[in-house]
Image (cartoon, rainbow, N blue to C red):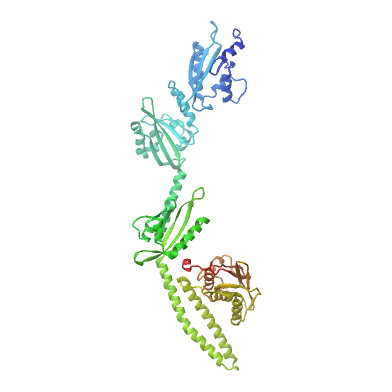
Length: 623
């Protein structure tokens, strides 16, 4: 290169509008290059200094490396300027192509020692498409680089014989084969298991005629190494004459989705069986369209001809005295994002009614806006009628028992009045009879109250009265009835409340009686009343057997009794605390218990103060 000074070569290369360099024909070492070449190679390789043509060659796929070197050797041997189009798979522009132009430096008769190379870089964009001669070898290399490490199973089948032309690692694992067993062989020979899928094979072969893609969902694949479900896409690949020459197959593993869908369907089937067995229906309220959609069973309960109703039409079925109760509870559930369970009556023409139980929950979007409410509905008319008949029977029997009991009590009182002072046995016996009659009267009053509570016929006759006097009077009565216990009223200030005197007296009396029943002889029963600006809190504390924590949540349920060796000999029907709970609820108060097993219990209830107008609840809405 002595005839061409370095400064002259560098100046000459800088004039070229493409990346250009001169390299040694045998060593591939670069003698000089322009700024465009330096910019190109710096963007593609992290190596600095000592760059050679090999640096560029290594940016190509293996097959294209061989093609480029072969073209270079041809240029050197022939002395002709030659070009080749390649696809740099490691380029920053995945759709780019490079056109290498090799021009040997000819010096008289000397062997070619140096080569000038320029690179024309192009890439496909939305505005322009590269125009070049078809190069099927480079196309295949580019394709291979794209799919070799794809997270899908990919293969290419050639001709109607479905000869495997390409298969990536994922599909080889899926089929349990290696490339030597697949490449160049028809699918039906390489994979004998396909003999049971002749209909699928035929559909794939027909693609060569129809030229239409084929999609098969949930293909069941069972091999020695894999068992699962896949979705398969068969895409025809055409040549320049629009003839289908091969088929691209893409398999996606959807085993988890299919298993989940099957489990979900199984759960739906079980739920449907359960709902059918219980004669339960389902419903859905779309809050945007204000439409209610009923299941078949729900439609039957409402005696409808259509599965859909406007929300206002659905509300028209509800009896008026329950509508506000339902609306308030649903609004509360929406506010707290909680479920709800309601019992109410629906009405039909000619005065016919039904009782239904509805449970539901709202579902929300990402912003927290409720989209719809869904739930279940059950016809409980027969159950409610049974309860009404039962309550009527209890009320009737209890009422009938009151008459002879009242007469019996009167006779006992007359005997006590007429008795001789010298006969201690008669006096003592009559006192015991009187106590038992009083207990029986309290028990019958309890059953009467339950009957009235369940039928919604109980009313609150509220007046202003001194709560202290009520508690003191009941405590004194119980000291006579329960001489085996020390009943103490703790001092407190005067409290005036607006409530039903008789029913609050029943609550206090029940709690004292309960405390005595579950505590030992000579134990203390302490009654206390505290008050603040908004409510007064009454407590009845005993030194009895206590209550286990798992029994406390059910303690105020109707007819619930704690089942333990300590309670088997204690008489009762489990109605006292239920009555207390219902009475306090209807006064707008609260009732609860604190207890430690084997150490005693304290029952509390609260009553609101200064609420003559605000605590006027409609008890028909509490059923």
